[in-house]
Structure formats: structure tokens, C-alpha cells
Amino acid sequence: MDKFVVRGGNPLVGTIRVSGAKNSALPCMAAAILTEDEVTLENIPQVQDIETERKLLASMGAEVELGYGRAQHRTTISCKTLSDPVAKYEIVKTMRASSLVLGPLVARCGMARVAMPGGCAIGGRPIDLHLKGLEKMGAVITQEHGYLEARAERLKGAHIVFDKITVTGTEDLLMAAVLAEGESIFENCAREPEVTDLAAMLVGMGAQIEGAGTATIRIHGVQKLHGVRHRINPDRIEAGTFLVAGAITRGDLIVANCNPAHLGAVIGKLQEAGARVDILSADTVRVRADGDLKATDISTQEYPGFPTDMQAQYMALATQCEGVSQVRENIFENRFMHVQELVRMGANIAVDGRSATVRGRTELSAAAVMCSDLRASASLVLAALVANGESILDRVYHMDRGYERIEEKLRGVGAQIRRMGDIFSARETAE
Ligand code: EPZ
Image (cartoon, rainbow, N blue to C red; front, side, top):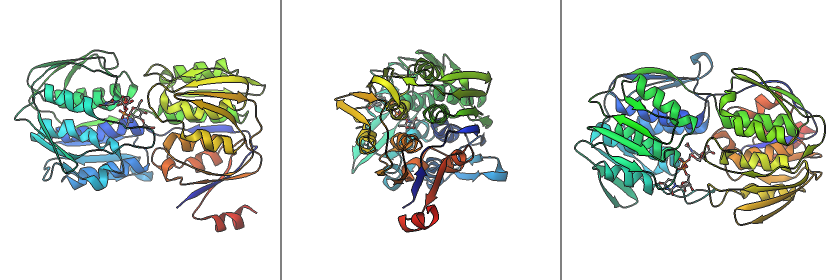
């Protein structure tokens, strides 16, 4: 099981490049189910979840080419024949976003069998709103042996008001509605850029969608969709993670290939804390922090509010800010798995339900720590970059799910970080 060995103390200086957004690529790959034609997606990140999605589509009968390097981070998917529209438990249990195939499978094949996603480290993660919406569109849904089965001759357009704002719920039902009969109006939709990215791809396939990126989306169902070549958005959470890395290490970091328009809440908070953040161009942001940083409060909200996927990373920064920072996690019920590991490095953090109080600034000392989920892992890397000494981060496979070659990218701007297969080779190499 791979580990990271990180020696703290180096400010990050230079230019670091952002990859395509995992959380855009996943729904866009599922959208290929909606057409018999070939779909090509560019700017695909080389992360584990994308490989999982490739396996999932291939297991249903799709032909999926996926290449990096010279292949320019591109995937070409043909769902001409979907011989087995089943998302099997062995795959779904490793990635709950597999539920994103539910809507497109029912829309394209008239049926779907999807293993129910278990919970995960950060919360129960139910998909009841996905199912409620599909039923409202005429699907008959049964549950047996841990699988959901959804059937519909042809889905019908519906007026759906989401009880809660759900990103993949909005995406799943958007993909169901584009081939449904008649009009659909969805209200209280997620406004995340990943929804807008998916909608842009679907429109490129011939779908009729208005209002993506706002709370109300209108869809006019069509009979068929055709192939498309679509470029995936830059990953706003990876970009935000790098901006925090530049600030926490008191560096001077240029984050390239990003979209500053998607980073408003994160940039605002970093500036409030005293970091200097400048938008240099439509795809480049510069972050500098040389003086003291001051405590600020964050409260996670749906987009365009402060993203829950940046909460753990920001908490690491808060340990280096003078004063008391209040961190409120409003989206998930258990997204403080990083706190105890940060405390083991010397952070002063007290948790009370969905709120955490961070007292800074505290000297962090390097330690052997355990990654528990994707963004908690990022938080521990950020803390290790400023901790005194050499930290060992275990179970970095969590990080590999959503960050492409992060140790190489960070090393490229001065971080002392390397990946090791096991602790003994790490000791030899680091000494
Ligand atoms: C997406 O998850 C992202 N994943 C998550 O990113 C992200 O944290 C989350 O949105 C919030 O922004 C992908 O896009 C693949 P939700 P999703 O449905 O869609 C409740 C990462 O780190 N809910 O918006 O699963 C749910 O329990 C990952 O990259 C229901 O109750 O999140 C949560 O409390 C982690 N019923 C809230 O809504 C439902 O049917 C928001 O969840 C659906 C959701």
C-alpha cells in the first residue's frame, strides 16, 4: 500500500498545472450511454475513479479507449451495444458515483440494475432523491439482493423540485430527462460547474436544455442524441487545494490551467486570511503569503458558496492562522475525519457536531498519519508541507482517486514529497 513521505519547510514557488475535473468527467463519461455514436472527452484526469468508470462502462458492453501522455488525456467511448446494463456491486462498492449510470441506462435501454452504493467515510450518501425523481418520470423501481432495478418503456418529462440540493442527483436526472417524452422542469437544482459542464456536453449531443448552472433547469426531451467531442472543465477543487498549498507554505505559486471563475469563494477566503491572490488570466491564478495569516470562519455551502470539498484543506491552513477559526460543515454529516490526524501533528482543534474550532497558529510536528478519504488526504499533505520533520502518510490510494500525480506536481514547485511502496524503502531513500 503506497505511502507519501513528506519533509516540511519548503515554500512552494513556481507554476503548477491543474488537471481536468474528476467530478465533471464522471457524469460526462456516463452520458456516453445516451447515444449509439462515439463520444470523445478531452482533458480527462489520470486518476483512479476514471479507471473505475472505464471498467464500469466496459462491463456493460461499451468500448472505452482511455489514454494519457501522448493520448492527451482523452477517452473515446462507444455505447453502440450495451449488452449488460448492470452496474455490479464489485465496482459500485469502490465508487459510489457509479450511480450516475442509473438515469442514462433507463433513458437509453429502458432498464437498469445498479448495486446500491454503500455509505462512505464522509456520510450515508443516500440516493433517494435520484430514485424519487426517476419514479416521478415514470420509472418502476424495485430493490432486491442489494440491487436497485429501474424500468420504464420511455421516461416522461416531469416537474421535479429537489428536496435537497444534490449534485449527482441533478446530473443523473438531467441525463434521464434529455431522452424523456415531453418537457421537464427541475427546481432547486445543484448549480455546480460540473452540472453546467455536463449540460454543455449534452447540448453538444443534441439535447435541449435551458438554465443549467441555475436553480431551475428546463429540458425538452428528444428522440435520439448523437456523438460529440467535449473538453472537460479544469478541476476547481484541485486548483483550490494548490492555492491553499501556496498560502500555507508561505510561497509564491502560480496555478495554471484552472478556471478562476469557479474559485470565487476559495479565493475570497484566502484573501480574507491575508494571502495575496491575483487572477493573472482566464486560466491562471497567483497566490503569495509572506506575512502572518489571520483566522477566518468558513461554512460549507452548495456552489457558489464555500465548497465542502475544500473544507479539510482549509482547516489545515487554519492551524497556521493567528486566532480562532470556526469551521462549519453543512453538507455531510461526518466530514471531520482529518481532524484527529491534524491533532496528532500538533493542531489545536475541537469538534462539536458539525462545527470545529481551530486555534492557531500552532507549530505542526511531522508524524505518521492515516488518510481516510480523498479530501482528508489532501489536508494531511498540506499540513505535512509545513510540519517540522518528515511525515509518513499511509493509504494514499484515497488521494489517487482524485488527484493526478500530486507528488510529482508538488515536487515540481519545491515540495519534499515522494511516494514509497513501503516504509523501509522510504527510510533508506529519505536518509
Ligand atoms: C458530489 O457528491 C461530489 N461527487 C462530491 O465530491 C461533493 O462533495 C458533493 O457533490 C457535494 O458538493 C461527485 O460529483 C462524483 P450530493 P454527491 O448529492 O452528488 C444528501 C469529492 O471529494 N443527499 O450533492 O454524492 C447527501 O447525503 C466528492 O470529490 C440525499 O440526502 O453529493 C448530502 O448530505 C466527495 N439524498 C447532500 O445531499 C440524495 O439522493 C449533498 O449530496 C442525494 C444526496
